[in-house]
Length: 284
Length: 149
Image (cartoon, rainbow over all chains, first blue to last red; front, side):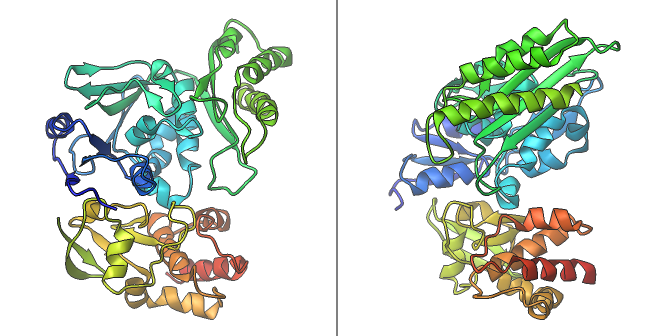
């Protein structure tokens, strides 16, 4: 059912897109449309203006800096992210997460910016970006800002994005020698959301000493969940007991709810197990 | 709003609502191979190509197709006879409901990864559901098609 005053805008520049978003308090940005179309269909949103970003220039590139950092435009599709040679080399967890979302159709439509703004805690991409210490560049009426993704999610499907603000780019800092991985556990069909997804990123020096580590989970609470205990691996040559401590912290932090993908207790156990596996994959 | 795009090689102009979905527009034009199945992007029977990308037309806002080349199973059957021949020869269908989606997905795979291994082929086709459990012959058909190119 179409609201009588609903309009579709297709701006060509970021400035135009921001103007379109600011011009109506019931405007919503559309990336690939996978989430917006679903929400529209089910009557969960009732926007008056759809501002499609598909024709906005300059938002669709992946750039690797000379230092090994990555700048990923908001309208890059998950398919492009998964196939990108620099992403696979510099941040494999990100390519692995993007390449396992849904099915080829969803990956060909869904965008990085949309994946962040949608903020469903079961999504695959956010934990990978969290573990890689990514930041989200946000543009809006008040100018630009670039908060760390760690503070981006404020509640179930809620983010720090203010009305008329837009994620324009995601930046992944360089991590020389960094290993990263994303693993997901889907006992139902492959295209489903994971019960638990786990992303880990570990930096080590030449001697094997861990100099930085991060772990984040999908499906383990109302928001994508960073497990700060992983940071305590820094300064160590991690043994199995150290990994076990992070796994225990992950289980304790997981506040998943019981649903058709498993009971809360089961998900806590899976949070621990996939934490172990992700860390081991980075440390082996 | 006015929408112009190319459907199976032919220019199309349509008047669409801002939230109208591509599947509705395509079926409204009389091409009923593209189906509304799950309506949430999972089953694959609404698959079409937009450019060289496979999309779920049940989640694709029609307005986003402005200026695009859209291909459905009907158009691919005409443009790529080897694709349909492979499905016929391998008997890659049973009841036929999912067949247009399987065909479009196979065409998308041929564009994205023409040298797909069997494992990659299975992975790619996995998002298009067949409830007749006819997967082996479908996979054989896609394999035969890729090998024929």
